[in-house]
Length: 97
Picture (cartoon, rainbow, N blue to C red):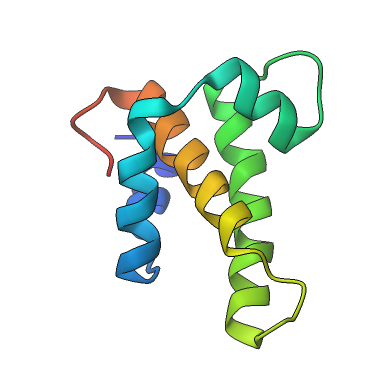
């Protein structure tokens, strides 16, 4: 298991957030979602995507914990779905989630 996979698996997030993200994995469309979330025309490698998504997710988690009025639970769930899906691409479907 890679360091990125280990790090993603060790994230401590609210159970409801993780359940919602796991539920959304079935509908994950890498091309559509990553282009929108990362605001790019070309798709990064799974490693590049996980690295970028971890940065975005950390920012969302800080906003959630701080009670920031601009925090979007919808965006947080979308980022978590992408993060879990991209991490699965690194190691296979049974290792993450």
